[in-house]
Length: 222
Image 1 (tube, rainbow, N blue to C red):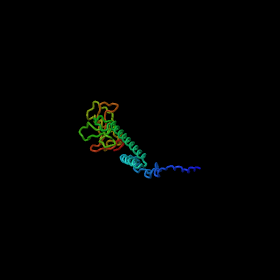
Image 2: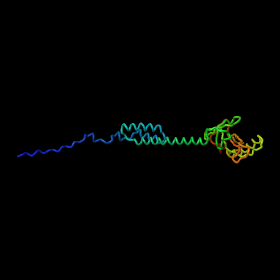
Image 3: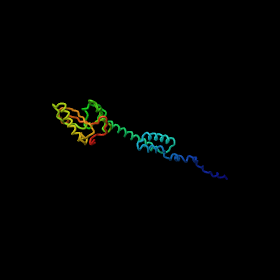
Image 4: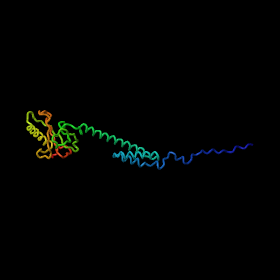
C-alpha cells in the first residue's frame, strides 16, 4: 500500500522590502513650501522686480534639489515681474512719445513757440531768437500765454511796441489772474505779422529773468 504524498505548503508570496512601501509618499521636507518661493511672490507684487527675480531663481534651484513645494509660486513671481517690466516700459514709452509730440527738448525760433508751451531761454539777453521747448511741470524760464490781434500796419516802431504791449497786457490779466502792473512776472511780445490776422499776429510771453518757474502761470495770480 503506497503512502499518500505529504501535504505541500503553498509558497508564501514575496513581499517588497519595507522601505519600498514609502515610495511616492512625500517626505516632510517635500511637504514644506519653499520660503524663497513665497518671498519671491510677495516681493513681486509691489514691483520689486530685481529682488523677486533673484528669490525666484534661488527657489527654483532649491525646489529642484529638495523636491519641496513652491514651484508655482516661483513661476508666478516671475510672471508678475515680467508684467511689471512691460508696464514700466509702456509708461516710459508713452512719456517719451508725449514729450516728442509736444516738442519738449526741441530748439525752435521764438516765433514758433505755441500758446501754452513753456521754454528755456536767457531772458536777460539783448535779443532772443532761439528757445528750447520745456515741460511746464518742470523748471523753465518762460511761457507763451496768448496770440493777440493788433493792426500794426504802417505804425512806427514805438507805436508798434505800445499797441503790442497793450494787447498782451490785456491777455496777461486774463491768463495770470492779476493785472500786469501788479504782477511780479515780466511780459514779452513777438510781432509775427503787421497785419491783424485771425489767428493772432502778436505772440505774448511771460517769465522772470534770473528765476525759473514751475508749472503753468495760468491762474497763478503772481
